[in-house]
Amino acid sequence: MVETYPVNEYQPDVNHDNSIVFFGQLFDIGVRVVKWYEYRGLNGYLKKKKVIREEDRKTGKMKTVRVIKGKRYGGRFPRTGRKAVDIRQFMIHHTGGYLPGVCFNTLHNERRLSVQFIQADNGTIYQTMDAKEIAWHGGKQNRCSIGVECCLYPRALRNPEAYRPEKCRRLGLTPHETGNVYTQGKHRTVFMMPNNQVEALAHLAAGVWFARNKVAGFINRAPGFPTRVDEVLPDPDFDTKYRKHNGLVIHANVAPKKWDATGLDLEPFEDRVGDIYYSMKAE
Image (cartoon, rainbow, N blue to C red; front, top):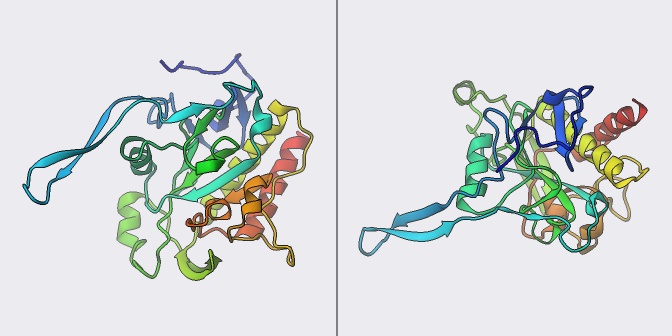
């Protein structure tokens, strides 16, 4: 049973609409956050059983492929008793689709996975569970990371009409420009995240890091992406050492077979996260 207002104590001076829930505390990040217990929220605590069925190719009859049930997350500190000090990464994914609800259904009801945050194309953020939970989104990095799925269909070469005007109007999407990115050893032409989505994502990243430092008692600088040895630019490629990186990561940094999140210009995004983070510290 999820509490209606799951915070440790009432915080009247905090803008609830713009706040994330981090270890039972509200932290205002300056952009709209729809929590799991609100109207139209995406509730990662639900345990309802889902039976996945498909047609048998030989008989033509429907058969059960798998049954999804139980929790789609884990407890972060059952053994150590430690708190946010264990969190060292904010991990960014892209969904490969358009809408938060569809992404949530695929993760929760079809794959038995989860993520703490899902971000809509227009920038609205959906928090599916308290950040104290371990969401199942990053493999070996689950315990040490907070994850966000950004609604984005990136494959501009495969489907150049993915963000055609009539579809954007019908689904309430923002038009997307294309760009060239390099990740996992390949140059790709992709749809880029629109400015409003990038700006809201920067507020979320800065807010999560600020909350993490507050709860853990850290006095720390703003988070950054891994950098190459011979360059100062953020590195989009996989390296095993990045699994121990303390800061921002895209999924491709820590998983050799992944190429998300793409469509995000890492260097200016990192700078914007820093600006927001230090403005939060100054308040």
